[in-house]
Amino acid sequence: MPGTFTSLVTVLISSLQFLKGFNQPYLIPIILLIFSISLGSFAVKKVLAETSESDPRWVVIDEVAGQALVLLIVPQTFLFYFYAFIGFRIFDILKPFPIRNMEKIKGFAGVFADDILAGIFAGILIRVIIVLL
Image 1 (cartoon, rainbow, N blue to C red):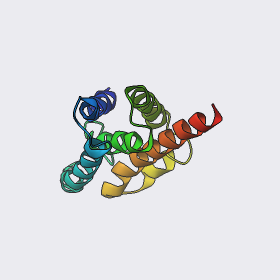
Image 2: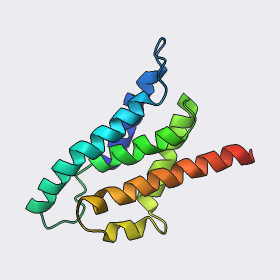
Image 3: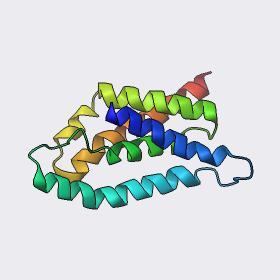
Image 4: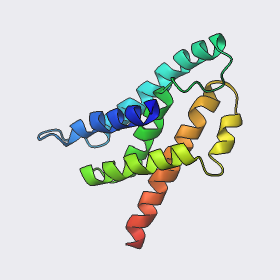
């Protein structure tokens, strides 16, 4: 549940770009992606050094990165942000091949890799559906 909540907050924050007068599509998801990876590189390394878990469930900054990434791939509309949220959560929860294999990677990269790949898969799937429809 913490991952779903974090993904939803990421979508809501990114949706601020749809406010009237904001003419910078992609800016907020880009900032969130860069911020989450930058901050995450320090925070996750510190957390991993103090716990025996390889990917603690309460560490959710990786969800920010994965959700922000899929938001950069889909068209910049409320409707596609909704699809991006649903798509990312499905791939992040079910972890189909090869996403599940990313969890075997140790350290910071392993914490982020499955979420980044889930974001890429969700974004590509949404783009493919757009082309097919």
